[in-house]
Image (cartoon, rainbow, N blue to C red; front, side):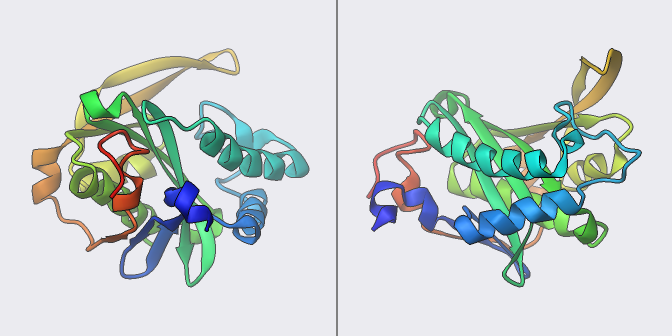
Length: 217
């Protein structure tokens, strides 16, 4: 079976209403269609890499290729986990978790996107909480970090509700202008006492070697 060679395909995170996992080909096609229908309002620019500005056909292809690319470039020292978020069996967005020298640093960085039609219902908080459970309870992380443009309040509110604390700012250039991002950091001790949804994890033991934290069982 393919999971014998790539056990991440058997990894599952579940909350009361969501499932997070790697997508199959049909799932990936549906995810690309979701992105084309919209990830944010036309007057917003929430991403430093403006991938949502692409024409629809190129945008859909970018979503598909990014999933393939992160799998193909994966090493235990440098990995990016792109979990597709499903509600009622349909993809609603992507929750990303990235680790660099994770075995030493024990730190992950998150990013995400959610289809515009699924926003405003608490899904963003629930999918981030699932990722944090994987990081802290599953992989024994010490910190989780994230950042968002200072004028993009929704993800910042999600982070703060989950217990993240301010960790400085970043300054970048987008379209010839300075954009300021707020960095936030969540320590294990703060995650442990935060109000968060219940999460279950399936298939992690077979993946530990890929995350750089030990041999597979």
